[in-house]
Image (cartoon, rainbow over all chains, first blue to last red):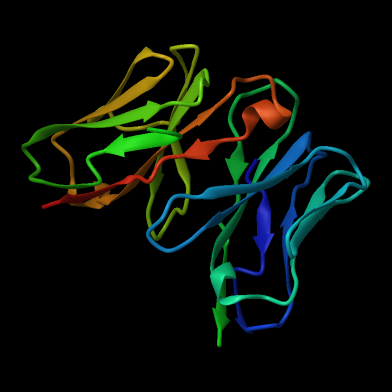
Length: 112
Length: 116
């Protein structure tokens, strides 16, 4: 079942913060976050596996709620290089399928 | 070469042509994927191969024919395509199907396909 991402798009000025959400109606085994810059391949950012987990990557961090149905990606003090489309990919069960189900993406634009 | 490579990077073909897209992964992974990416459907899974066996065909038209001769190589054979098949075709690989970190996918740069 495809996860729901919100918002669909966000425009920031450099230095501002943003939050991108990824929600499922079912408890998830894992959530994977990717960023795709225009004209490039999606690049893996991080994976969350445990309920209540928080993880960071430079000024980009993410959380996974206790029920494991929602993950949020936090971008703080945004930089121009953060522009791109962010996708979450979810697994519903461990080993149930080797595929991830991706959300429709959130397009982030950071302006000077 | 490192990571996941794809050739060609750009392809223009007529509706009667036959062409093939190639993907190679240098990560020692056992699962490989084809995705179609267009403005309407950002990441549309087409096929999944795990240990060379096809485990997913996401209702893809028969004019797309995948081939996985070994865990490192994946092909997508194209014939009698339609203009609406124009898109970016992405290949990805992952460790295997055990889930979690093993399911993390690494993408190639894609082939930009234009069907005239």
